[in-house]
Structures are given as C-alpha cells and as structure tokens.
Image: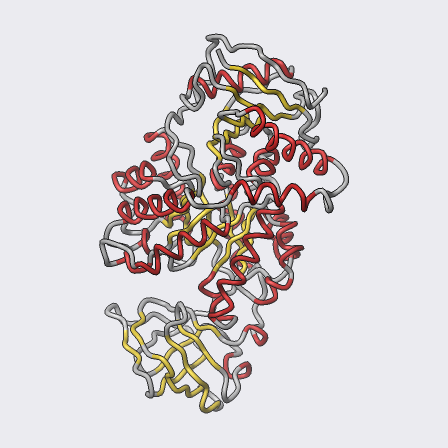
Length: 503
C-alpha cells in the first residue's frame, strides 16, 4: 500500500458499533488522572468527576483492602458506562514502602527541636515513639542520617543508635496521621521492587481487568519485567514510577520497557534536593514524549484544595508549567481521594490545563521532534510507524485536516502520532476495548471502539463513519486516517495513510 495515497471516498449511513458511546470531548487535551477515595467513591460524585474531565481513575493500593479496590474498579466501569465516556483505571502498587505504625485517629504534632524515638516493630505509634515496619531499621541507620516522614514536610536527624531504638531530633515539624511513610536513605534500603505483596496484588487486579498497573520505586527495567511476567495472561499496561535516583539514571531503559511513566515528585523530592525536582521533571517528560511513552506528572498539584475551595497561584503555575513541558497527564491524589470537593478540583485542573494549552508551543515541538528522530529512528516496524506518523503530521498541516484518525490494535499508532502534539483532533479507534481504555492516558486522544474489518477500504470507511456518528467529525471536513493493513499480523507497522474528504 502506497502510504502517500489519498482517498476522496465519501462515507455513507451504515450503522456503526453500538458500543461507541463517547459522544463528548472535553476541551483540554492534557489528560487528568484522579485518585478514588472516601470523598469521591459515591456514584454521584464519581459520575460528576468523569463529566468534569477525569480520563483515568487511580486506585491507591497502599490503603485499604484489595477486595474494596476490586469493587471500586467495577464502580468506575459502571460510572463510565452511565456517563458515556471511555475511562481507564490505574491500580497503584504499594512498593517497598516503609511505614510507621498506626497513629491516634486525631494524628500527632511533631515539634522541631524535640526528640522522636524509632523502633522496629508492627505496633501502634504515638507522638514520642514511632514503630516502623522495617526489621533492619537499627542496622541500616547511622548517626547524622536524615529520615523523612510522610510527604517530606517532616524531617528528622539521627542522634543516637542503640540496641533497641534510634533516637532522632526533629528538624522540621508538622502534623501527621494514619500510617505515614518513613523514608530512610535509599542506598541503605534492603527491600526489593516489586515486593511479593506487589506481585500478589498485581495478579488480582490484572485478573479483574484493570487497565494500568503503576509499579512503585522502580530502579531498573528488570523490575517491570518481573511484574509483566506475573500478569502476562492479562496484559495491563505498566506505569513505571520514577521516584528514586537509580530510576533517573536508568530512565532510558525503564522508558523502553514501560508502557507509561509517572514523575512521582513526592518521593523523588525526598531522594534528591528539592531544587533538582523541576529539572528532573522536564528531563523525564521530554524523553518520554520523544519515545512515544505516555507520561504523568504527579504529586501536590492542587494540594491546597484538599481543604480550600480554590488553588494557590503557585499551584496554577505548577500545572501550567507541566503542560508547557508536554506532559500527557496530570494526576490528583489526596485532592480527590479525601478532599472536601473532588469535582471542583477536577474542574479547576481542567480549566488551568485548557488555558495553558493555548500558549504551549506544540507546533515547534513537533517540528523539532521530526528533525531529531530522523537521526535516531530504530530499525524494524517501529521505524516505519515513526516515519509515517511524522509524515502524517506534515500532511495534516499541508492539507489543513480537521482530525487525525488512528486505527490500531495495540495503541502504538496512536501513541506514535500523539508524540507530535498535533493541532487537529486526534482520535484513536480500536476493536480491542482494553486498547481503547489505555489510549485514555495519551495526550489529546479521544478513544473509541470500532469493529474488526478485513480490508483497508472498509477499515478507512468505517473509521470515518464512526467518528462522524459520534460527533467528532463533521460532514465537509477533511480527515487523515492512519492504519496498518488489516490482513497484516498484530504488531506490524503502520503503513496506510489516507486523506478523506467527508461528505
């Protein structure tokens, strides 16, 4: 098939797949990931959050029973069906997290200058002594070490190491509750990734049909391989959380193995100086976009809205800068899990992202990416897919197309096209519902379900027909269709490019 072929064939009035229900497209092209929790798990709030702009719902497996998360997964499916939008579900594995024992319900306030004892154990904690679920705590800490509690706001310095406890001085105080994380120097941490519990949870959630699994504290690509092998029959996409310095050092190999990447700024900001985090964020996002790997920017994006009705100016700037960086998605954590108004949080994030996108230099980015990748395209099918999506980006500008339709079985074509951050609407169509849901994480993509077709003409015809019937394409517009020939095996290169006048 000549990839330069154009086709002026018009679409008819044939019936499209009744499963294609997504008749609305939100205005922002940057995706929103929102964490489900006590504040947002009611059907009414969940429906409203999805209508407000949530594309992927996150289940934080660090908290609660796995059985409850399975119920939440099914609740998201039901809500997406009611609202008529494609929504992905991401299960976030706990990883080798070291935590303090349960604190009193009201929490405790730690005051700078006072001492706090740490003991290895599983019991309850209080304001004077934390029980820490890490057996070699005493062996792995030395005088002068810095220990961080929770999200990094509270820090301690080790003053004494005894036979049964560690005495620390509180450097920066604050209030903490629940079972906060206890961060010891990463180079001493003896826990491995993924943990046995991670693999158990991954297998359960994969069998239930979750779309994404986020792997915490990844240090190398081999960590992802272990999880992939554990869930092989179900094929959820793996999200590598970059939150350690070893992960930053191994970014290229991790991004090559991962299906998506998360810039987990919370723990990353504990592992390295805070002033390094914005620069690491830009580096990670840039590399992932270049490789066509969806990337999520996470942690404290609208933290003040846990209790406040509006964000701070700094938070607004943070979100806008993440959009300027080119991130595929923005993530909300406690803001929607326990915040006082999860729907308002989502609406605020969507508005900020929409405004930032008006100023983002997407066309300059696409031009730069095309020049750069001609020097480093890989061999094999991926080279062809990269080349034809680059050509499609240029053709879309030259032909003034209104939409780019990517027909894909695996989602690779859509992700490769999304790298260029095209101005026209970007629609991903697949007969595989799992693929459709994973496309919900990619920048600018409106995911849709279509049937399987046996010829290229039929594939192109019904792709355009589906987009028209859903309201994403209007009669009289020009669309560009990308696809792999239907008679080729799954995983073959994208080798069809057609420009269609819709009438």
